[in-house]
Image 1 (cartoon, rainbow, N blue to C red):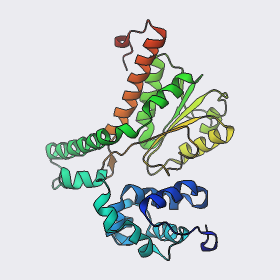
Image 2: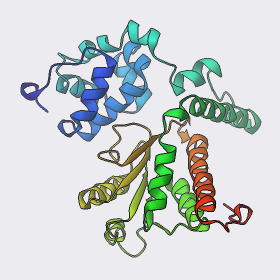
Image 3: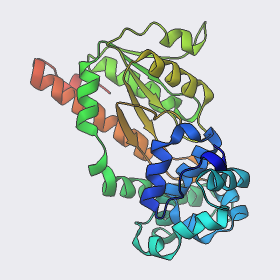
Image 4: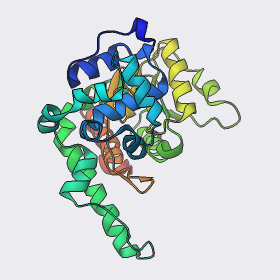
Length: 293
């Protein structure tokens, strides 16, 4: 996106978010990652120099600068004004801030002290779940269950950090009587496995930063063929969310390079419980205690 083609710069965070979503095709993947981080962490953007923001986010400073210019701003500091004091007072605490302020800064003074390490990581997980409880009303859980039950076959993809959740979800779906295929790529490319999807099949894609290239490419090809997609990820501008049928945004804590999966697995298991109860209501004869999921 060049400055010549840039839209007028947004005046507040809501306009910023809208522009990022509606004009996402104008931005590079790195710009979208920077934008997603900015929307999820407005206090950091408001109060941090771009060099410090790069360290906190793990995203290059140039990506924030390029995003700002693509948005129509003169530079990062100009964009930063959108995130300043009014937003700082009005925005709810982010997950990172909850961990830092509500639970205390989680540090590991002695890596050999596994008891202290476990306590710190447990507190981070508790913060993730508290954060989920506060915003679960905004997740389209019932609609997601409807779409899963309406599909002929449910395909599930999640690699790297998301592999465990994808494996559990595929297993649990089959245990609940919903035909599911986990896309693993064994013996051929992952996209080849997804290419056999019928028109009434559904893809559930799970991916979190750094977004796995395999998941992004499979989701793109499935989207191009017109199959519905349920995206489980961290941000509305994640590379797997474009034109998805339903989006479940989940924020889990990251603790010294290890991403918690507490909130993610809680949502996945809640979906499975909803599916099992719905099937028992519609079909009868299902013994929930025998699902063993």
